[in-house]
Image (tube, rainbow, N blue to C red; front, top):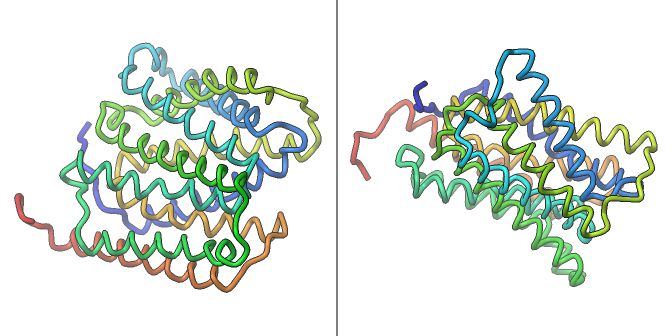
Length: 311
């Protein structure tokens, strides 16, 4: 299969809008279920549920031995990075707010774009695209920085925020590993299976060792959260994400995920009753502006491709 990717089009943008809305609800779902299931155990359970569903799909499609016969070295690395991402998310949500986690987790496009810029010549960012990423990231910082400047921040929240940033780094590194390895052309089910199995296998011991394996109370909100995270997020949305990565430039797709914090904060306002501030409204405008700048740059480059070797 060809490893050529094309710039994101209208279909990719529409799909990313749906995916970002789903991903934006993740932190809210974890917070809602936290009184009933510790966050680290939620991370473990969702990976296990997703792995079972992907494994069932592979069995129904006659895809056997994907873990054994595939590019297992790259798959192992992707699994470790995936587990690291959600270890940081699960632990971070014990200390910081869901909205803060959404901000720092979704700095991943910055790390992915930087990695791809160095490793994949076809995905090197142009000056206009760098400017768009800068504007979008500035918007994310501004959307949440106003409250911090007025009231300060506790050490616990600061630690949670740092873990969120590390989660974003791990996610960005996962994107780069998939793009530059044989996983780039592997079936989406295979790529996802490596990550979900790695996540469940590595996070369960962490949950046990840190005392976050229980107690568990399966209240309705806990069932709803686990079903949402395991079926919708880890199974359906991740399969769609890897399908997109096989067909479109990863840097373009990653930039669109800047929309996720907007959905995440909106969900926090509606579900967790978090308060929106003027700084968030201004930041949101900057985020959308940055996305438009990057998208326009990608469209212009696809219409007027640069010659090989051009600066």
